[in-house]
Length: 193
Image (cartoon, rainbow, N blue to C red; front, side, top):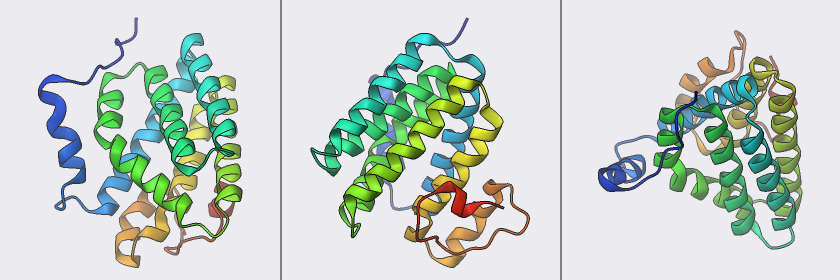
């Protein structure tokens, strides 16, 4: 039996404030986000609970539909997708941590898209990546998906960081010769080892 879905509330409200606190570096928040996503994807691929797979499908369709609405709706649907993956992991700690960083992640996604020269193309690229995540989870190939997801998140967010801040995140890539420069495209294939 899996852990029940985490429900926020009560004393847990300190977490989101902590995640936004100035003492936490952007690199630290992105490292936590990357680690959580990889672990959640790996567990979801192992367990593949039908209800959460349907939730991921629903969130993915919402992302597709939101492209015509705008980046805010798209960003919300993107976060909903990752919340469904966290529920599918059946790991309460991953769910709690995702809830803690939710607002930070939502802000990063929205900012990245809104500042893009071609927001629509970026949303389509993100939609394709999420389709790959969903396909890998459905197929039960969590290790490959976790590695691909980690590289994709690094590629997507590394432009927010300076060279020194990117260095610790490279350890998450499983690439002995990874370079510390942001990539222009979001595709995880562009960040392969």
